[in-house]
Image 1 (cartoon, helix red, strand yellow):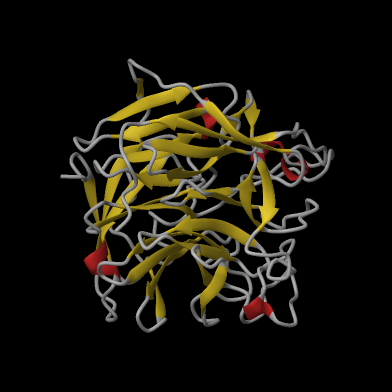
Image 2 (cartoon, rainbow, N blue to C red; image 1 turned 60 degrees about the vertical axis):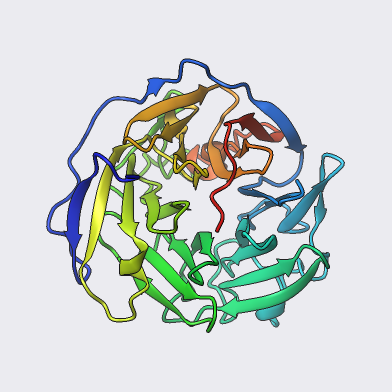
Length: 379
């Protein structure tokens, strides 16, 4: 079972009966660590997301957080990013938010080989206009937008931050995380047939940041510290990474300000009537941004503090797949049909907002891949 060795938390109407138990220690090292291979480098804006099509096309995105971002979605062509599907769609026109990419946080190819774009609708942290927070599908055969699902304000409002998505085309649902620092933090479920969407697990212990969480990265605590006079405050970012099991029965997720992994049955999320949801605490994986699963049901996650990638096997054990100084903030993961795991290393913690106003990032940012012996768990 994919949730072996997981402790269950009964979660009802926004409250959990018990908080996760603290567990210490790091996953043990994999005996045959694979090597990182450079796929592309980025000398401009900082990328966050990556995804790979059936034919091997690679797509990335650049959030509009303050860098100069000429286009927020790109395809890697000849090793360099090019606006995708075109520059017009990538123009951050807030007067027509439904027809433009404003601030894209993630890109994901589904089992039907369509590229889905997760748009926060937020440009440099400004409030999102209605029509900004949305899911947009692009047909990779024609390179044309074929569908737009706009979230109502009750699901993703002006301060929401839709972060990542996974698709179950067999049952017809999409699942997203809302990682907004302003709350609420929770999961969003989309009925792909109707476009209807709803929220689940808002502000429960498994979707909230751990209170007072301060990671140690590059040998020092990572804190909100926008200027040199500030002592710094903890960075509280809730549910962020998300992944779906190959059979579509389990959804995995994690807050960014946490080291734990959680799982929940998708059947409990898709019910329109709000009922108690059992959340499974799957233990310590390390602080992670993105998550991904392979066809074998194994879960991949970053361990940002250790500059590592870890894997949770189906027996519940964790292994360090690779640890490398080049993995400076392993962000989003994607598994290609070439049986390789793709990961963006973007130095996110070195931004000025966390370092007294000094930008410590050193270009280029890098997209890596490494062999894992299994394909994607798309369905």
